Length: 291
Image (cartoon, rainbow, N blue to C red):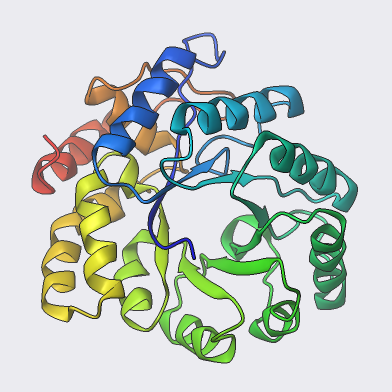
């Protein structure tokens, strides 16, 4: 079982938007050295929407090679075309990904039956472990718990990243799919509560800049240590809030740049963090003990 702090890794870029491979190695090593339990490669935070398919898989393969089996690597391979998602998932499987993360199809707004058939078709086409990803705030399509329960009976669908931010709903899902698939939080601000309710980890943006703190929080919450979870959650909460002042990954890429970890590169239509938010993000880094 993949558990714990699963960093939704940014894709570092040069000022012209090309991938910065040396900085990518630096980030992977940073997480290996600081207790991160797994890496999600080329998800939303990794700017999957603007990497072309060749780049997408090159980044995934590069991370897998650098990690070299030391922690799990989960490849983002979702799409709003079932055929494209299958192709990306097949390639990630060939590259050696431990699992694939498949987002609910965005923009075209399928029905619940369409969602079921989409994920079922991908799972049957590619034998790699697969994690569903429900983030209605971005996709304009909400996969209901009942649909997840149906998908939980498919053997290689092993988990779901629940980024609804709704702890009671997430707790109901944990109970409904217990023993069939694992629930992960996909919302840093509510992750502690969902893990205390039975989720087994957090796919985290905050972990990009605070890997030790997020790993410790996940370990405490999964173990049911409420007091330590509350302490660590309070420490990280400034980051959980301020890293979403503009669309992710804009603030977290600026934070990593400010920490000296990466350059300022980001791809249009995303733009660098607005000047008016620099102080707020810097203050959050200081309050959480990163700076």
